[in-house]
Amino acid sequence: MAANRKFLVSATVCVAAIAGLAGCSKDGTKTNGTSEGKTKEPAAATSSKAPVDPFAGLTADQIGDKAMTATKAAQSIRMVGQIKSDGEQLTVDFAVDTKSACTGKMSMEGGNAELLQVSKVMYMKGDEKFWRASMSGDGASGKETDSVVELMKGRWMKMPAGSSGDMGEVCDLKAMIADMDKNKSERKGMTKGPDAEVGGRATATVVKKAANGETTTMYVAKEGEPYLLKVVKVGGDEPGTMVFSDYNKPVKATAPPADQVVDLEKLGADSGA
Image (tube, rainbow, N blue to C red):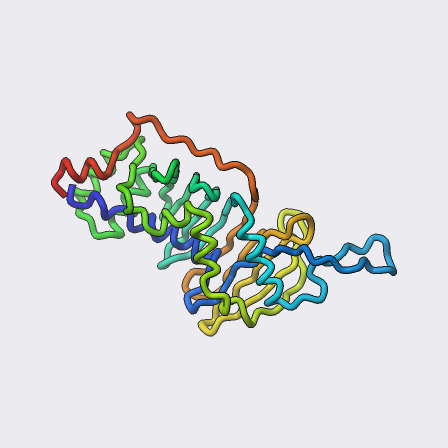
C-alpha cells in the first residue's frame, strides 16, 4: 500500500499541537507555568483566614523559573483541551508518564482516534471519519482511502520504529519537558495576572504577550504542590486551552491483542512500499 506511511500526517499535526500549547509559541515564547512554589512567606498578621501566598515577593519570571523545577519533578501528567491548528479544531485527552507510557484520545473534523504507547511501541486506532480526514489531508486517492478505512476498521495500527516523530515525544514526558525548557531566555518578560480558579483550586496567573499578537496565560496552583493547572492561548497560529491534572498518578497502558493490530512495518514490507 503506497500510502501506508502517509496517513499519519494529520494525527501527527494534532499531537504536535499539544506540545506547542504546553511548550513554546511560534515566535519562541515560553508558555509553561507550573511552579515549585516552596518559598514560604509569613502569614498575614491581620487575619487568621488570610491564605499564605506561595509566590509573594516573586516576579512573574521567577515564578516561571520555579515552574520548570516542579514540572521536571512530575512523574505523570494528564492533558485535556482544544487547539486550533491549520484551521482545524483538535480535541485531545492524553495521559503520559516518565516511563514513556501513554494513553489518549483525540478528535478532528468529527473523527475520533485513540493513541496508546507501551514499552515505547506506539499504537493508534481511529474511526472511519478520522482515517478519511487523515488520508484526504495528505492527498491520498479515493481508492487508497477506502483501502485504509477497510483495513483499519476496529483495529489498532502499530507504528514502525522511529516513525512516530512528534507523537513519540508527546508520549515521553521527559522529552517533552526537556523541549519546553531548551531556551531559558524564552521565559523572560512575563507579567503577573489576576488570581483565578481552575477546577475549584486557587491559582496564580502568569501572562506572556508575544510579538505575533499571541497572548498566553498560565494558571499555577497556589495550594498543595504548585503545579500548572491550565494554559490558555489567544491569537497566534494555534490558539487553544489545555488543562493539566492527575499529576503523579500511574498511567495504565496495555498493548492491544495481537489479532487487533495491523503492523505498519510488516505491511510496508509485504506491499513492497
